[in-house]
Length: 242
View 1 (cartoon, rainbow, N blue to C red):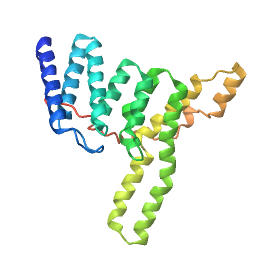
View 2: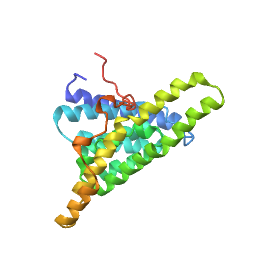
View 3: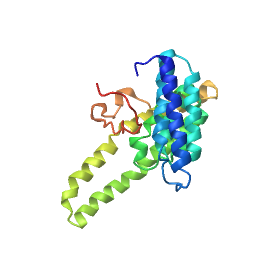
């Protein structure tokens, strides 16, 4: 927003008051799976502080936004928009422990590991916690490995039940997962984690490197065929279209 800082702070305060009014009036007896009716006010308020923090190149506004988001999560535990923005801010602070806790809180599973895993996996190397990073990459790679057999079974079922209209859809889905950019990125990052985590002597480290069979000349990854399956619209935002 192209407004003075004091106007943005006043706008932020007004949005917080709107959120609190909506929560206290309409959000007291919600189910655990329901989002608060006024959560959007808090999300917009956090984005205002995020923009102000970037404009002034200061972290205090960003910290206040994170505190607000954590308060919202206490009242609306199923709001994944709040979790995603909190995860992003934790990474901006370089707080990988907090980011990992929020990622686990999101409980991303199955195909979401491909479409939404980028919000966490791509920023992990910046934290320097390589052993913990490897665990996240392994969990993601396990999904791709285990799902390969399932993808073949889906195609076999189309033959068995003569639902050939779904054949092309399943084939495209199989190709997108097989050539997933997320899968390749996690594979490469996992190997890098192994390289930088070598704590033995030179002989042991060289043996570990040889065991990885890294041969750039024999690289079989079809880089030009990789499929970017990221859901870039997962994080709600109010940026103008033009």
